[in-house]
Image (tube, rainbow, N blue to C red; front, side, top):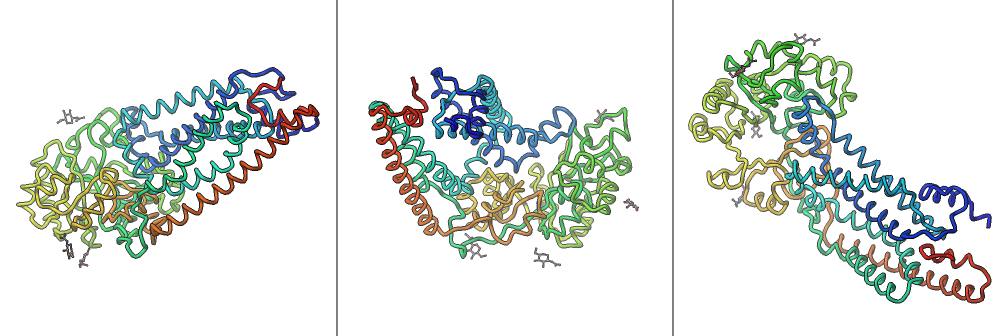
Amino acid sequence: MSQENSCCRVCSRGFYSCHWRDPSKKKRKHACCWFSVVSLVSLLSLCWMYICVVTYNDREDVNWQGFTKLKQWVNWFMVLIIISAVLTSYCILLLLFALFQVALGEQLDLHWLHKIFLFFGVIFIAFGVTGISLEWQQEWPTVPLSLQATAPFLQFGAVGALTPLSLFVFQGFHRAKNGSKVLIAVVFVAVSAAIFLCPLLIQSPCLIELSELPKKPKLIGHRGAPMLAPENTMMSFNRSIACGVKAFETDVQLSKDRIPFLMHDNGSEFLLRTTNVKEKFPNKHFSYSANLTWEELQSLNAGEWFLKTDPFRSASQLSEEEKVAARNQTIPSLLQLLNLAKQHNISVIFDLYSPNQESDTDDTVSTILRSGIDPSLILWLPPAERESVNLAAPGFIQVYNTETEMFDKGGNHLNVKYNKLSTEEIRKLQRKNVTVNLWVVNERWLFSLLWCAGASSVTTNSCHLLKDMDHPDWVMAELKYTIIWILVDVLSFLIMTGLYIFQRKTHRRGTEKQKNNTSSWNEKELSPFLPTG
Ligand SMILES: *[C@@H]1O[C@H](CO)[C@@H](O)[C@H](O)[C@H]1NC(C)=O
Ligand SMILES: *[C@@H]1O[C@H](CO)[C@@H](O)[C@H](O)[C@H]1NC(C)=O
Ligand SMILES: *[C@@H]1O[C@H](CO)[C@@H](O)[C@H](O)[C@H]1NC(C)=O
Ligand SMILES: *[C@@H]1O[C@H](CO)[C@@H](O)[C@H](O)[C@H]1NC(C)=O
């Protein structure tokens, strides 16, 4: 038949098995097993890709780990995403080619090179999962959390994929012997039922009436607006004002001459990432904020690194003027920031990185009190000297890092990582009038979810994106969702029934023709996994 070598056939066969010419007539052993392997690895790579996409919000953690080990800023997470995307596309393509061949009635014969690639793919994913479990365990709760935002759509997607795939299952079913028939039927019915009925288990804070939607969470600029300007510089805080932030989040350390200044990195990474300290002091290694005087710190450039390493791949969005300004940034003092905050009536929340808690806290508090800022604008976070701070400056708002400490001390402000609380817990705290701030929330889906749950505010790197959101990505009344998923399920079921009947008819016709021994091509079309000889 001329059809034997049509372009599509040759391509899919060539890609899958590297037989560009006539298919080998020989029976391939284990073809079916390898087909299952391809399906499983595809599914696995899809799950892995999903994990990568939902943890993208915290990509800085991974890059930071890489930086502390190698002292060199590389966007490792981007590398991981690219490799995973290539792997996933490859597996899915392989699966599509295999299905295509089955549809055309070709023999399946996976080339050994693909087997090796699949093997490496599995190894890569296994390393990834182990890596997260060992080094980044606090990230796992993000995955179930993300399902509250994505599950309804994943379910629609799964139903959408299951419906056409059922054709292949029916094909196999009609052809199989009686024992296998039962197995195929049981597995297929179980999987379909799970996919059709899983909306019964889906819970999401966004399944509410629009009128029940809580107020939009306020934004807190994480080190300013670090995607629009170098972090922890006056430019960065100025740009975050344009987002309408409620508070500046920053990090404080003290210089040798007791000036509190703004710098996140401390310990052995001190100054290395965000300043030109290596050029200015080539033979010295500072690991302690009090190694330098305020004058020495001011002589460092704190902006050039941003344009050089482009940590968020956002530097290209800056205008020429902004680039000049970014290049000219220095390390600000806490006092400079307090003056800006005072001027714009914006709160300040900070971590204190201090080798000497007591005296550093005293000097920081006295700097704040001297600045003349309204004390209720200070959200005091460092837990170490909380009692004495509360005595010296009773006007500060005390913010706690854990629920237990907050309830112990009778506070009502909480500041935790976004995946530490379930959406239920956030809702409960909101009802108790506790102000809940969650860090660090950069992606729309996550912000939407926490909005539905009732978070008071979020600390974010991307205030310029979140400020424009007028409502969460999706909010749906529970009843409406129930009607939609039932309709989708019913539609899919009807299509599957149609496919089943069609398949049975084709099969009958095929077996009759075979009995009459008129042609053999029909049999081949119907039994791609079985020996043709
Ligand atoms: C930094 O300070 C620490 C502690 O005072 C000291 O041991 C170290 O030598 C200092 N390093 C430099 C480069 O001055
Ligand atoms: C750079 O900053 C300094 C002080 O912060 C300022 O005096 C100077 O004009 C700035 N230069 C440019 C080119 O913006
Ligand atoms: C500052 O903002 C708070 C609310 O965040 C408001 O209650 C207060 O009146 C403002 N103060 C000034 C001087 O605008
Ligand atoms: C929360 O605040 C509202 C209004 O400020 C008040 O009516 C309500 O009783 C408070 N709820 C609790 C549990 O304190």
